[in-house]
Amino acid sequence: MQEGELMKIDAKVSNIKYEKFMFYFILIDLLFLPYIRILSIKASMLAVIVWYLRGGTKKAFNKNSFHLFLLFIMLSIISLVLGLLYAPRGYSAISFLMSNVQIVVITWFSFLFFYYFRYQFFQNRFSINKTLMAYLFFALFFAILFWVNPQLYFDIRQFWTLGNEKTVFIHHTINRFTHIVSEPNNFSVVVIGIMAYFRFVEKLESSKMLIVYIVTFFLVITTMSTTGMLLFVLYFFAPVSFKKVYKIKLKNVIMWFAFTIGLLLFIIIFHDRFGLFFDSTVVSSAIFRYEGYLETENYSGSRFDIWVRLLQEVNIFKYILIGRGTTILANGRLYKPHSGHFYLIYGYGMIAYSIFMYEFFRFRKSMFRSEYFAIVIPFLVIFTMNTLIGDLRSTFLYVILLAYIVDKKNRRNMEVSK
Image 1: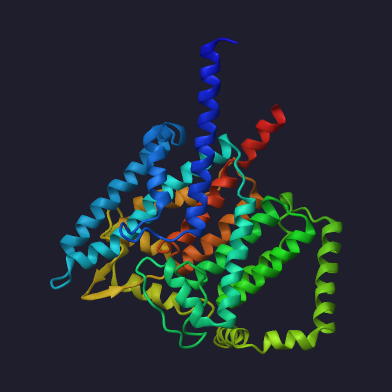
Image 2: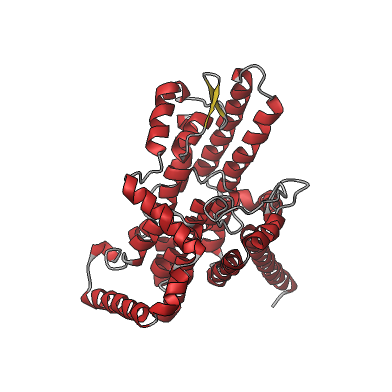
């Protein structure tokens, strides 16, 4: 073998090591590590920029996707400038920029991380199974701490917050469990997404999947999220209907029926110990929230009223081309849309909103339908009901899961053809 060939091999091995190191550093930073507070960013943001500057742009983006990304950037910047110009007198320009820059950075990096992870999953086949499982147990540790000593949990969680803000625990229904993300409803869907990933994408064996279900249930009920609990029930009983082309297999029906009966019998036999669990402050507070929604039939949490009022008072058709920033100011007041759809339309305009939806929520031919319903639908629900994009960690975890399934069919076809 000639010297030139040996140099090429060494360069290729060195590049693979570099790619692997960068991949797991970015993944671990996004899921586990705190912010760089001085810069108000995550270290992985700097790392992925370095990767793109070292030739990653040509690797990750095609011509069409890159142009859409640039168009989104341009529209969002123009929207921020218009928002500043139209902001009512007396409203601080610094406050406007501070509240908007964080969101626009999250949306821009959603594109960068999505195409970065998509490239790595397709090209290098890196695995995220152990990291996601570690994330579930990392969250479980904090959830147990929340049950045992909620104030200590919030004191430790402070280390992961961007502003280092201290939370004084008052009551479980007021200071809900969020793990290290920003919002409890978002976190509940994050763990549902991981649960669905292990069940429908990786098809984890039954014994391990049972552990995932138990941990997920414990985490969801600790968040006291109604949306999260409804999605948990849906995805717990969904394996039969999520089978390929919705074909129901008898063995799957029997398996899940037997599992459900066995779980009920286990609860009946050990009902005394389960009584301690259900009588706890956390569970009783969660049940109180669930019953409130059921009794009032207000399943959207008044969001429909908020959306109707927003549409009536702020003309959405003025935002077809350009928005005015995600701080929605009109008629002398500040509006909080409580929906990612309205958040982006009013923030950056309908064109930018369409680009975002096209990239992050559409079904692609390279995806399996079961995996689309397992991963995308839960996050689309929370995006609709709770914005999602204002929560950096939740948004980026969704981007990772989406990037993994988006080319799954193409990867499998390549494996078959080899």
